Image (cartoon, rainbow, N blue to C red; front, side, top):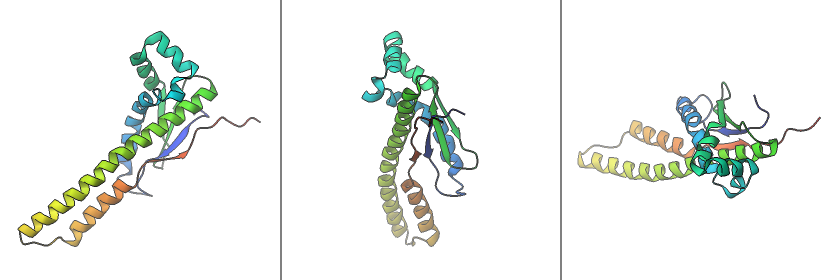
Length: 167
């Protein structure tokens, strides 16, 4: 494994049954975050990124960044490791951190909208139950509470990439 990587926690808590779904989604989605990362001014100014853009154009530069991004799940955890396979160590640190930041930012925006949608769905569900002359059961409440907890537990960076310490 490379020495330069960032770690992102994507789970819902220890042994949660939905962790596998979140891990799979992160493994599939995080390389796509490289596209947003290389558009960040700090990353875009790096010599390796400027060179790729000059040689290939910005569309192919984005494809290049995605192809050089690697992710892996730390076995037995809901932690995903992300690293970048080209450039100097300093460039790898900056790019890996930008990818992790972009992924977390995208997920936070996505889940923020989901929480608003869940509140609306819950209100509509209560209204439907009232129209039917039924009550919202404890099981109904438990299902909504579980979904709300899942939405509120957002992916977050637990370790930023850093240069390896010299012996």
